[in-house]
Length: 262
Image (cartoon, rainbow, N blue to C red):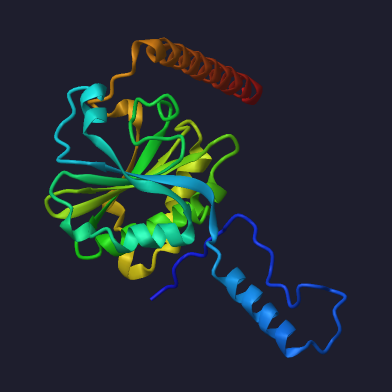
């Protein structure tokens, strides 16, 4: 069984050997007790995560009719996760095997919500991994650790960000999703997949036919707010112009090469 991924935390200094660097080599019994107490308290400090995280729950999520309806179903659970201890407290007290059919749970970075049309997600996409329910909770824990441990963040392209991860219960599987902010970053898309396949042990690794990537805007239920639709339309036109220009340039290069060979 592979070990769980390492966690990167907001910097903590090592334990001090003594409260005073100029103290004599041989301390009195009282000083030794004081140093032992200080070092013990330091080991008890929460290990802060690099980012703050929130947990969301979607109760009995059926096919979405609109964004407002979905947001009304979305419930933020508990308090913000700010440390490794906070994460384990939440994770150990969340019985994933009791989440009902078509319900979902999400662990998302502060500032992001698990909504396709959210302003910060609207240009993003996600990987979906279908795993058997028997191993779903274990895979879910490991994927969450890869998120809060900054492993996913480390494989993203410049300018991209991890939004969060989710688990949705289906008839015979758990669908685990990994969301990032910019679906135009192919390096990010490839990096997330490689990270999952490399970090999960063989017995938990999803099979090739059981995972896929999708832009949020490609989901049938996606509907951008009017104020953002104009931005998406402009981006689409720019992408089409760039693709047409690239095709023209490629055709011209091919013609020139053919002419040179003639």
